[in-house]
Amino acid sequence: MAAADGAASPLRRVVLSPAAEDVLTRLAGRHGPLMFHQSGGCCDGSSPMCYPRGEFLVGAADVLLGRVAGDTPFWMSASQYTYWRHTFLTVDVVPGRGSGFSLEAPEGVRFLLRSRLFTDAEMELLDAEPAPPTGETLTEAG
Image 1 (tube, rainbow, N blue to C red):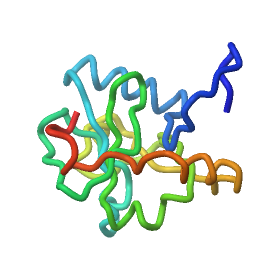
Image 2: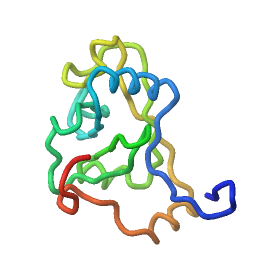
Image 3: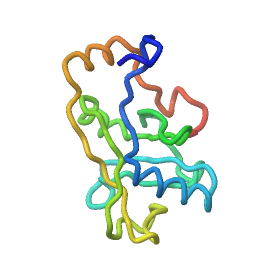
């Protein structure tokens, strides 16, 4: 990818849809700084969960895929990262109730992931970069 000035820009692994960014902005207005975690558990555990930053303890093996909506970290469990590392993820929002633990549940919506495989060229760029940080390499989850 290239920036408007022609300089290379980092390839992102995760972004928000406009609708998800609107919900996240409202939630941040009520709860302060937020974070996402994708655990890969069953049922709603396979959906991205949104928490007040610092209220979910990131594990040493959790992988920081990137930051969305400015500085909101998006973490993924190491086991899930093994499966998803080849995909570009978009956090979206749909009507319905998700998990009671994720902040959007009372809003009558739930976050979900949409994905596409990275192209071969994108994977070459990602493979040339250092591995994403983990909970072990960072001192805090945010």
